[in-house]
Amino acid sequence: FQARWWALSKTKTVCSYCGTGCQLTLGCKDNKVLTTVYDEDQGFHNGQLCHRGRFAYQFVNSDKRLTTPLIRKNGKLVESSWDEALALVTERLTQAKAAPASLAALSTAHLTNEELFLFEKLFRGTLGTDNIDHSAGFAHAALTEGLKASFGTVASPSEILDIQKSNLLLVIKTDAYETHPVIGFEINLGVKRKGVDLRIVSDKRGKLGKLPGAQTTVHTPGSELLLLNALAKVIIDAGLADAAAPGLSELKAALAEVSLEKAAAATGVSADEIAKLAKDYAAAEKALILLPIGLGYPGHNAALAEACANLAILTGKYGKEGTGLLVMGEKNNSQGAADLGIHPKASGLNGSAIIDACISGQVKTLFVAGENPVVSYPNRAKVEKALEAVDFLVVADLFLTETAQLADVVLPAVSFAEKSGTFTSVGRKLQQVKQAVKPVGLAKSDFEILNTLNAALGGQKYLNQSELFAEIAANVPAYAGLSQAALGDEGKLLPVAPSAKLVPVAAQAAAPVAGKLALVTGSALYHSGTMSRFGEGPMLVCPNAYAELSAADAKVLKIEDGDAITVKSDTGSVSVTAKVGYRLPQGVVFAPYHFGEGSINAVTDGKAVTWVTVGK
Ligand code: SF4
Image (cartoon, rainbow, N blue to C red; front, side, top):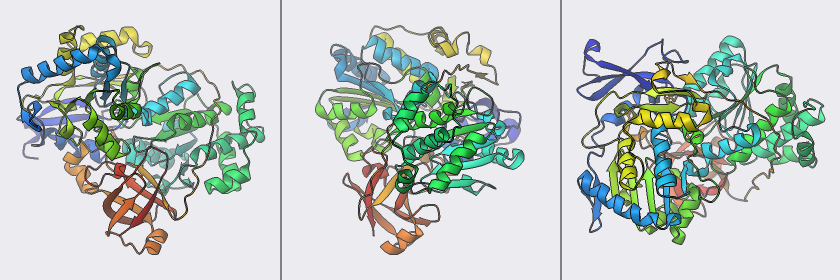
């Protein structure tokens, strides 16, 4: 960077990418973030950051940032003043208030807790709609629903520090090195320094599986629930279950028909391997289940969290250090969004239902805060059709994303480096976000935007975010008694008091489709790419959309590494670069979902597995 160390202003804050919640220090000069500083006294991770935290801050300074509001006039987005843009949005939201069912709002979980709380107050409170969501109702939103059913809380009953205190880690479905790399480092330390036994259950091999002694159980895509149910069945049949586990007789009855041999055939994992994994998990003095997951995994996430929780509850492995279930939210404030109830309650629509309702004509006005559903939601063509169908679309974001390009009004928002507030991390750590630089151009924080709209539409006007935090503390039990100021540099671990209940989970493995490959999507970069595609670090690691094939499938299809290929499903098709690797079993294709060009969500359909053909 172009400045001397001593000439930088230094601000301690929290990374705005994944839910790990790493603390970092931003080094700034001339209102630009020039570096992140390694500080071994910071955070549970002793200052270590992954490539995103360390090298992906450049999106803050990008010359592609939105610096002024835009209004669509004669079919084109043209620059406007804030007064004109907010007056138009206020007018249209006032009209929508008369018919709240026709109004919907989607948020990203990148917003601060205070902004998310205000988002909910504006749309649910002031405007009266229950059609609000984050993460499309998939991913963390669904997982926390599962947690609530099993443990009576939307927060994980475990924390990140439990990783190194465990004897056995059961990592389900994906690779923490890719999704939450600093948690990957914690696992690495646990394995190498403390001898933690690492077991991975996934539909592909990954970097975690290369740690010494790690054992990876590779199952056929879409069969993970069946596999987890089979593990529970082995534990019960072997007499290893806690006889006092609440709901044991119901779970026993629900699993009565599960046969190890049939599960082996459907999952592709031998009966012996299933039995050994179940017995090793049950025998470990302290075992922790990790579920690192994101929007790349739609499908059956609530059931996935419940099936994992069943293993912990059956064996009494929760509520003690080194045990339990750690659900790893994709975004920096996924846990905050769950804690604050940014999802529909009784009568509202979740994110995917909102997309359907835009197409059917029920939803006519849509407000999107920081989310990019065109890229991040399944079935891109359907999402684009939905956004084009609404009468009025407002998007507040940092960049003119694929979603913002379809909007009637675009409001320039600010990044984590330009605002203050709090985020809640995966392990329930509530931490302060501190402003390091001034907003670019005329951009405003989501707090300012939502606060102005809320007041204009008849709601309360807040003086600052501390006032909002005080309301959170008064209304959300886990935050009771806290204030922003009391968090200090260290932050506070939020309390959790898990109850427990075994929840029977219906499981059907996805049936193979002759002549087609199973597509699984996930992370290689970060979410919809809104931030990471504007950072040099991530772009060096993963510059283009790709689809990864096994060497065996590549040979049959006569595809070589680097070839231009087309991935096609009943939903759509996309052109990407082929990557031929060691990680995938035959019959499976993997693609990350972060890219606007070559977006794999042009092909997906919202199910756990999409069946595709691949060719040159
Ligand atoms: Fe940021 Fe997550 Fe990387 Fe930590 S692990 S530095 S929170 S992206």
